[in-house]
Image 1 (tube, rainbow, N blue to C red):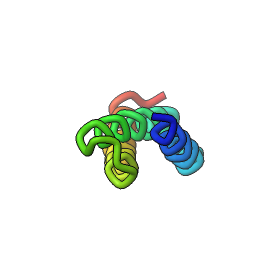
Image 2 (image 1 turned 180 degrees about the vertical axis):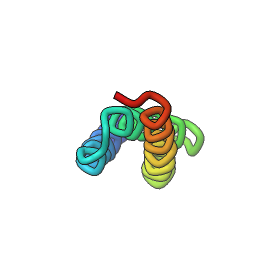
Image 3 (image 1 turned 45 degrees about the vertical axis):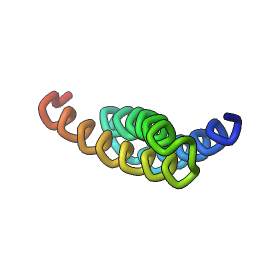
Length: 76
């Protein structure tokens, strides 16, 4: 279980670093999507590292796009 938290921590830190240049909606979407995707990927694959990282990447991409679209609909 601690392996899962280490992987999720690394993925989350990476996602936050990548999303640092984006808007607030993109940043929150990327980070939230990466965490949720990592958890779902881990659960779906029985805790494998590949499933966790793959789910985090996919979740980060989906979350980033959702955040970008949110920012487009709600300009400041």
